[in-house]
Length: 191
Ligand code: IMP
Ligand code: MG
Image (cartoon, rainbow, N blue to C red; front, side):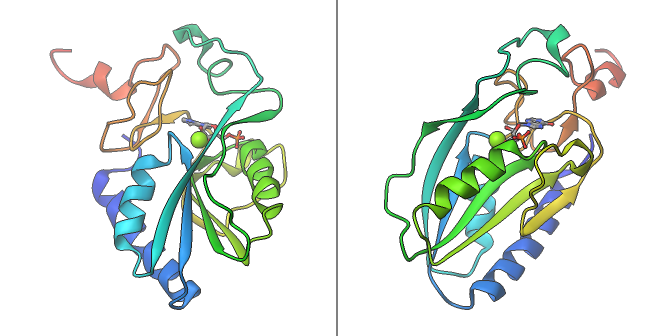
């Protein structure tokens, strides 16, 4: 386990207070990046004291689709190439306050792609929040306006984040070992 559910809840409440103050009573559209940000968005949305609506956007990559356990660190998520849109927003964002909600900022390819895409809608304001940030992995220079936790270069799962679609429902954020198993499970007696 890297970040406990209690630590997450505490930090999400702090982010929500900051966001509530910064948007100062104005309505805001929360745009979640599927699927990893779904749980973060649902917790954040309930802690923010603003008039909000939701939308969701989906991305994929043109990189390797190797999702075998030996592909940890290479396939599955470690895309080499361009980002592609798999689901667009369902409303015009023109003139609106938009908060893009992302699970984790890694190489920065996804966030920079999505920022440019959303800016083309000509929103009134565009801000971004990432629950996690791995700055040591950055390839494209981009930062989120709000960051929950800065973490080292480890592959994490839980609280919405997956490895090959698994582990999204773990309540805590955990580190995945090189063989695709949860590191913590191998240390649990009787497992
Ligand atoms: P980026 O374009 O490299 O910044 O990729 C960001 C996306 O990669 C995130 O939205 C996640 O979907 C995925 N990702 C990056 N690192 C991790 C991780 O440690 N666990 C799970 N997904 C990750
Ligand atoms: Mg994601």
